[in-house]
Image (tube, rainbow, N blue to C red; front, top):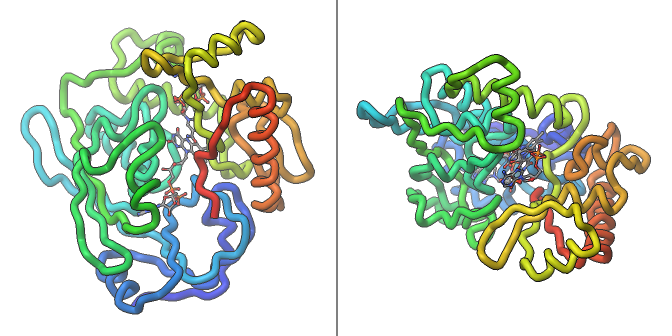
Length: 337
Ligand code: FAD
Ligand code: NAP
């Protein structure tokens, strides 16, 4: 039997700490519970992980499934690498900590990202020059309409920059139950050349860093720059960094010589959305109970008691001003519910 709760506040289940209700909340601990829900043909259904990449703009009608499928299981290994099947309801950061404690390499740069393992492939989480696709092997999912089980391999997931097939063509169709990753047991290929990682490691007096040192450095940097959702409600980067044509970039550079960019292809570059928002005058601005973070303009915040609609209105306003000033469209990374 599944456990159903009615009219439950979701305030503690989303990192923006928006206080809206779920009409019905169902915890899913294993596939059997999921099949029970599918057999009942409940509708509409939402899938909730750690709530760290959603903005709730009102009460959720219908059925909200809270993913609690746990477990970390080694399913194959040789002397070089190991394949691990992870329950989608495991916390991503705890999985990273587990891998570090076993000296496994591949996801150390992805330390301290909130949320669940099941949501990691959704937007192909990334940070400090690494994306989860670099260690992804496959995932197990169940179709929410017909209950069919499917194993998705990497080439079927269309991973891109904060994108996957599950955020686009197959949006809301599959419940991801497990994700299978391949991590290195030795000869770790460490990624230090991003942001302040190398400098932080040197500052800590480490000459030959290992996965633990990199994870520690990433955690230290993140704690110093990003608001802790336990203290200030937020969902990380609200917008994706836009990729624009080089021609537009060069015309903007004539007006704003300091505009930063990172090469993407021969004809395109990525511009940090945080810079665009800061130059549009929003950094550190507060609007009643909500605002734009003082250190990172890409992060919208709820100081307490803010509502999702107000945050969405602020996001629209930011998008409009950035478009008027730079002729660049910025799109939300956060899922709007
Ligand atoms: P939720 O917010 O619960 O859900 C997100 C979406 O995925 C929803 O559409 C939901 O329906 C769907 N979903 C969730 N679980 C499943 C499932 N099992 N099956 C099918 N669909 C599912 N992201 C990065 O990429 N890099 C970062 O460095 C990063 N840093 C962050 C820092 C902070 C402080 C915060 C608050 C967020 C950050 N994020 C970052 C965003 C967020 O943590 C990730 O996107 C994370 O993967 C979301 O996981 P979640 O379980 O909270 O997903
Ligand atoms: P940062 O280091 O101040 O850099 C600002 C932006 O410039 C980042 O968005 C990053 O793009 C880009 N950038 C920096 N160095 C780069 C390089 N060497 N090559 C390509 N692009 C580069 O960013 P931050 O805010 O402190 O975040 C650090 C990392 O954590 C970033 O990777 C960021 O994506 C990730 N993060 C993500 C979220 C989220 O919610 N998605 C929240 C917090 C942090 P990329 O974003 O493409 O890396």
